[in-house]
Image (cartoon, rainbow, N blue to C red; front, top):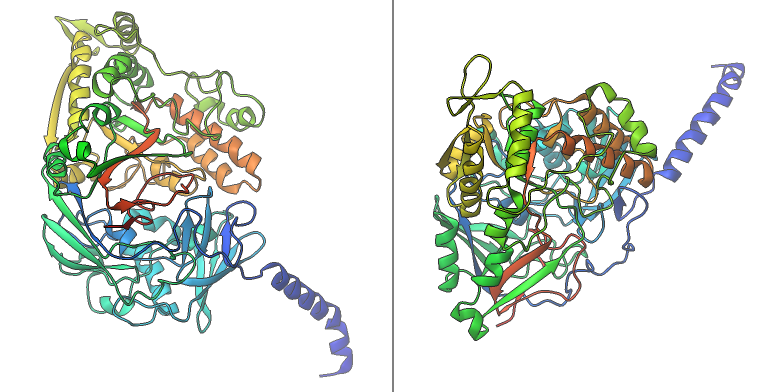
Length: 604
């Protein structure tokens, strides 16, 4: 090769060298990663701010679930597993701090690095990371987990796999993931996927695992004993590899946690009053005030604790299946919203103590603002003006009743809306032009007494409109199957939302999976505006653009009239044995699986 040949390419070689050196300088490894800005905690942090690093270990507790279970694999679509398992038995490369909107710190991975545009992310595993059987967590396990969960796992894990361009081992303990689309959140989502043991599933059908096929995890707890549908006992692994890493210090302090299963909430509550359970979350403010004066509370053996939070309200209520007529007509949905006598129902069930949810992100800076859309929010919405329902741009407020049992004014408004949609009373029955009667069935889960009461009151109002209302109460397994197949008209609905919404929004209301069995888009939203605003939210490079996109999305969803909102859970309410203690510092996200029992301890 001649010197002249090299001379011609020296500038290019130099440019390549500069490019790579600049890339390496910008893509420095870090102990954590935040959606926007830098992690709040320094590299040498001792523990999470809401954990007690000196919390003692020990104690046995019993919690209660309603219904039953037929699987101990929470990572597949098939079967019903105790919801707690994926939080207690398995881990991801990074762990989330619940005192920041969206920040991750090293868990199985000791460090993370990413491109400035977050087109790729790399994780370096901790050398001492181990599964519960003592075998090391390897890059091979990581790659297998991403691929298997992305192709055979629960729907909640499949979205990421389609956005991965390449996943490869780049060092003895390092894996690098490149993405095929611009989405700054993907680097964080990748850090939150559970890691399973590849060797366990050699020659086995992961997607159709049997009850005894319990996935091996690396988490603090392992399944110690179980009886299908009746109980599961988990014990803290005394050889847990991560007990001393900063992210875990002061967490998972209980030696044994047992989950007992009960037929319904009433039986569960009686078991708690009798001392058979160690703690219970209460979601009804009136019941909290009036039914928690039983002897154990009076003696001080049971403590009532309230945990405030700063997260959005999320959406709780009754969702309508817009895949089916007549719920595909927004005027019908508005009529059903108008006929729902929230003020009277709320007073009956919660004593009026819990405020109504006013939008999906109400109670936070991400919520739509009152009145007409302005500024950046309006600019985003006007791109989809042809697809927006009335009230989206102008401002939408939920119908309000007068608080009386009859709610006459709203019933008249609802009747007018139904007439506009072609539904008129004929011989006391509401019928469409073809003579078909308007009937709906509310699908309820066994043991949900508050929703049952709400439906009974609501049904009386709908019957005054000539609508035939039926309720169908089924057990957990039947309910899961019916929801998976979208076999319902109206059903109770809950979507908890965070201060940093992201790709999960596509699962909740994106059009791509709206008709897929098992979809989390229960209402069947298929809206170009919703899809486009989720894209805008994910592509935001500044907090300001992110807030604008989320507020615009909140408007479209709320004005879509897909859900009849009920009351918000403005504070966490936990009744618990006096021996259970928690730190003085509370996280901004308040209570949840990541809080109780994760940072609590037993002192007795």
